[in-house]
Image (cartoon, rainbow, N blue to C red; front, top):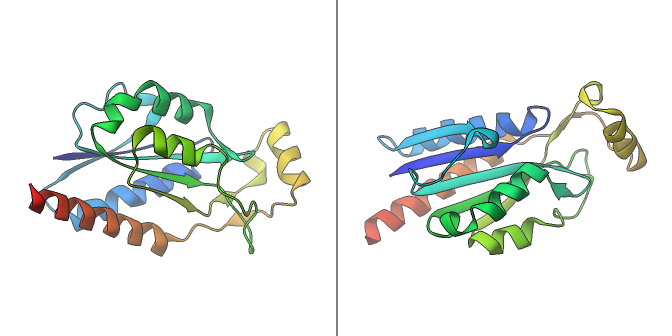
Length: 169
């Protein structure tokens, strides 16, 4: 079995989470191929038995590219083991406090085993004018709030789930 870890990331923070997930999955599943590929470069999911797919969250929603890929490839994704993740809340307490508006629907569309939300990073100097206005309106603080332990723990749960599924077959 091969595993695809793929993500839509606007400024790189969510892509770094995908890289860490890939590294942790490789460590937890020796001998299993794990590819970490930007979602924009994924043409097909057919070579993979499992997919971990994530998106940065802006203005409470997944990036258009990620929503489009999930919707366009829903049938192919439903035939695989799929986990979804979102990255975006920043601060302590996290802003926003709610799940992305579209995450539950996307998870249901592909029959995802789980959807998790990881805190993100906000570097105001990387943002466009509209993004700066948005984060200013909600008073989102700059900083890196990613929890690498939580990312690795989730990868371990995915690996355990895949090992159980393989043993059952």
